[in-house]
Length: 479
Image 1 (spheres, helix red, strand yellow):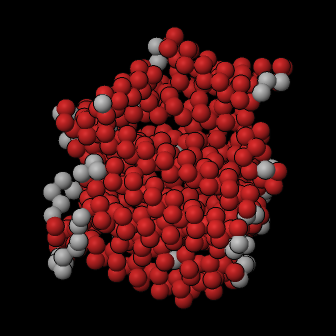
Image 2 (cartoon, helix red, strand yellow):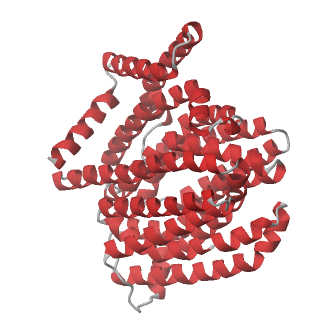
Image 3 (cartoon, rainbow, N blue to C red):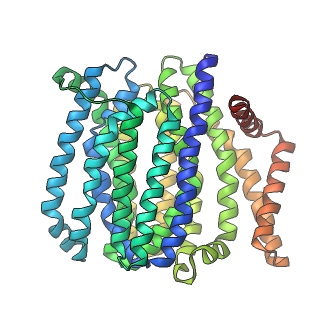
């Protein structure tokens, strides 16, 4: 990797982190406000229909977003073709959802979902408009523009949601937030990209993109179904109230185990694609990234499990009490969830979309099957099913990386084992001290963090030095 590329990746990673952490920080604060203004039922109702919009957005994408990033010689014709296909599919999907919304609401058992879904479906069209512009910015490592677009758009959407919540609009406040966010983020992306489609449309270009994108499309589709179907099924088989509690717990867990990996993957997928013909370099980079994310996420999840009760009660209030044990159990699965995406994107970068497709089908069937069994037993069974599915997903992606990146599953486990042991053993010690001496939870966080850093340094954990190196390089670049 050249010096210029390395600087671009580091700068891109920092801005991608600013994007993700900036949004997450705001989401965290806004979620606290909305959780106190709205009810678990409001969150549950919107959560039940998000699957429709999420799946439709993926279908409108058509897999062309990933295909354009992976294609090293993408042409202006490719971009325009993808744009017009995205727009056409999104309009058809919007029309289909608008017509079928009352039936979907009846099937889910709550008539109000029909009107909510019809309105929320506007997001599908808005996202399709900015798709190609976002891809072009990602290929150029222009994550600064993406970050600023997303952050400003979220601020505007949050203002609208809070104002509506205070005026008693309930679930509609959350729907409006999604629409305003999609509207402004895609508008800003279009402006930042400085790109407009031409009238060119090529069937040959469409076919070339679809060869790669078709498998990525279905793989992403199944992944999103598994992600969003949880709230839908919990709401249908239990109540929107329970779905709201679950959604809050899931949201908290995602902040911990998905935010940083997602930020890194936005930068790393284009980088992995550049290394697709050098498997040794790709494997070396993947190892570093896996250890680095484990070094940050493992201790974070551990301490969150320990302080879950006082933290959630402080932030959201007593009406969210039922989300506490849900959050703690979901964090157990987070250890595996945080690692699985790196293997996935590394394999995707070398063009093995067909392999990922079949792996995705397998993982999706396992996840959906586990959840379906769980909802017929109890909410606790659903939580266990989610943890089990995360383990299966991690192992599946790990085996695929072993096959195509030559990064053995045993080596993957050994690379993160010292970090896991350090984080959890120290966590057990701190938890025991808290029980015996009734230590304040804020003091626990400080104590645990200090012990973890000291122990990591003493054990010579490689990821710690790598984290320091990345931070120093980013600071020196800015200076």
